[in-house]
Every structure is written in C-alpha cells, then in structure tokens.
Image (tube, rainbow over all chains, first blue to last red; front, side):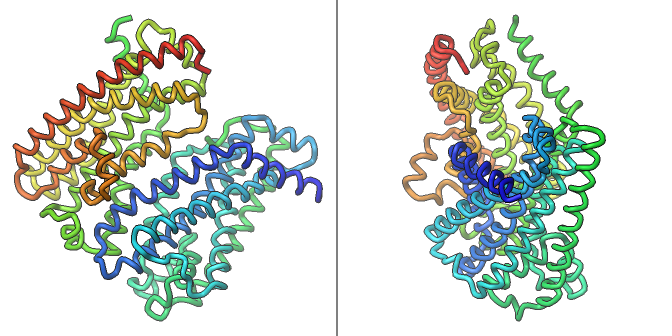
Length: 264
Length: 270
C-alpha cells in the first residue's frame, strides 16, 4: 500500500519536473486570460471601490481556479491514461487507476498555487491592492479544503464516467466557465430564501465562506451558518458519489474491458 | 491541384466538423455569449456604466463596445489558431511532412484552406450577435453597426493572415512541442486593447500595440459602439491604415515564411 502511494506520488512529481515547459505554459495561459478579462471588467468599477472589488474578484478567481484545475487536470487526465494503455497495466498489477488519477492533485495544486501567486503580484502592482491580506485564516483554509474536496470528487466522477463513455471536453470547459458567473453573484443582494437556494448550488457555499474569510463580514455575514452546513453536507455527498462511481466504474471495467474512448 | 480545390477543402473540413462533432459546434455558438456575459455580468455587478464611460473617456454604449470587442477578439483568435496553430496540430498528428511536400507552399495551403473557414465562422458569430444589436439599437442603427463589425472582421483578416503566417514559420523554426500559442495569443489581444482600450495602457505597452494589426481591427470594430452614426472619416482612416499594414505584413511573411519552409524541407519537420 505504502509502496504504491510512494510510486504514485513519485510519478506525478517527476512528470511535473519533466514537463516543466508545459507546467509554465499552464500557469501563464491561465494568468494572461484572467488578466485580459479582468481588465475589461474593472473598467466598470469606480475608483473608490476598486480595492474591495479587486480583492473580491481575486478570491472568486481562486475558487474558479480550484474547480477548473481539479476537474480538467484530474478528470481530463483519464483520457490520456486510457489512450496510453495504462489503465489495463495498473489493474493487472492490482492498483486502481483512480488512485493514480488522484495523484494529479499534485500538479493541480501546483498550478493553482503558482498562478494565484502570479495574479496576486500582478494585481498588487497594477492596482496597489493587497489581495492576500485575509481576515480569518482558519476559515480561509477550511473553505479552501471544502472547495478542493468537492472539486476533487467532481474530477473523479468525471474520470469514472469517461471510462465508460466519452465526454466532450469543450462542454466541461463551458460548464466551468459558466460557474464563474454563478460564483460572482452577491448572496447579500438575494432574499434569504433565494440565498439558501443559491448556496445549495455546488461550490457556491464554500466560495461564499471564502469571501467572508478574506474580505470580511459582507453586511454582517448573513447565512453564515447555513453556508457552513451546506458546504459540509455537500462535500460529503460529493465524496460519497465520487467513491461510489469509482467503484461501479471499476467493476464495469473488469467485466467489459477498457473502452478506449477517452475524455479529450 | 487548383487553388479552388484548397478553398473547397477548407470549407468542407469545417462543414463536416460541425456535422460530425455537434458538441464542438454548440460550444462554438456558446463561447461568444459566455465571454460577453462574464464581462458584462461581473462588470455591472461590481460597478456601473457611468464609471465605464468615464474611464474610457468616450460617449459609448458599453454593451455594443463589448459585443464588438468579443466578436473581434474571437475572430482574431480564430485566425491565429487557424493558421499558426495548424502547424502544431499537424505536427502532433503527423501530417506536417505531407503538407510541406504538397504542390503549394505550406503557407499558401494553410492560408487558402483557412479563408473559407474564417468567413463561415465569422458569419455565424455575427449572426449570433445580430438579434442583440438590433434589439439594443433598432433596425436602422443596428444594421449600420453590424455592417461596421463585418467590415472590421473582413478587412482585419488580411493583415492577420500575414501576421499568423509569420507565427507559423516561427513555430516551424523553434520546433517547440508545448503550446506557446495558448499564452502568446491572449498577450497579443491584451496589447491590442481587446477588452481594455490600448490608449489606457502604459507607454511601453502602447508602443507594442502600435505594431499589432489587431489593435486597428479592434478600434475599427469599436466605432460601432459610438452612440449615433459612426464617423466615416475615422472609419476610412482605419481601413487605409489596415490596408497599409496588410501590405507590410504579407510582404514580410512572403519573404520570411519562404525561408522557414525551405529550412523545414531541408531539416525535416518532426
């Protein structure tokens, strides 16, 4: 068990080092695209509220980055894994391909960390805003972990589906892109009942918690406890679905063989 | 092989791609509105249109401004990916050596097969935005704005063809497998003032923006966002400027790309 975990960790770390240009490429591409869109968005913002807006936008982007990297770098990698014939190789040696896929947390996390640091420096220089000046570090970490768990489970659900059928990659990108629109919505402007419905949308509650932790109370932080409860319950549901779909896919695969129609 | 055959091949390629890959076609239809919705949605939830007008320093309609920006940004990206990106794609799938030894020069094959595809996707994109523009500006004003956008997309394509061919030869020369285009393209758009006006950029960035063809295409498209009738003198000036840039870039591309192709023929294209 320990040997296989060590091997999986080693595989992903060494791949990250061997494909350093691709790694740099992923970081730069993300940063430049975000900056390009953000400059357009910030044209609407009055000078006096630029500081708080840049900070809110930064943490929304971070939430989006987690969702996007984990779903594409983890979920999307299954296609590559299938096409290189590695799924069969691992099953024959008694190692679940999903364990290998879960190791993609390493490149995913590295890309998130580097790109967010880069964006923070750029925004700090351009708008003179300290986007990393957080109010509640413990809540920031908790919301980040919850968001990561939800995204990881989603990525694993996608990879287990892609073992049985093909999924158009473009549709996943669009789903991720549409998610930003939902995440930027100010919960405080919604009536309480609608606010709870909004928070029930996957990723919305942990993102809201992250905003409370970094920007502040947002009007005394209404729906704080509801957001916390929804985040925890939702993450557990995501994890259960993720584990269940992985098990079902593995059983299906052992009965029917690997279908080489991948994700990409 | 006649040039018409290449044109036909390009068009058929896209039509069959749309027919056989419906998900790609649907995502192509969704992208422009998603980009527009993201910028306008976030912009309006964090700020207001009067701040926008104050910063831009012009009396313009923000919605048409970003429709024009999105339309031209996506069209320009399409040209850069369609021509320069083809080199990478063909290298990956192993067809680049065949294109290099085809009867026409590689750059001619890439450009001529691409033109009908560009016109088709531009037509689809403008068709998508037509209801929104007509709804916002009425039939008469809306039609003028659509005509300006179509003019910008068509005239703007010519210098970009040469510009992208230059990039294609650069990709042939560096033999880089990682996709440098995915971050170079948004940088080009940023310096061209795609969503943030180029004249608001720092001085050093403005110097770069002056040599990029996309800067003038975006500026031409944005005249559609001016409230009231567009200034014909300004439009004529920009069209003239784009015609001049077309000659410069295409002539340079003709000379440079030829050398790059010869090098690839001599040393191989793997």
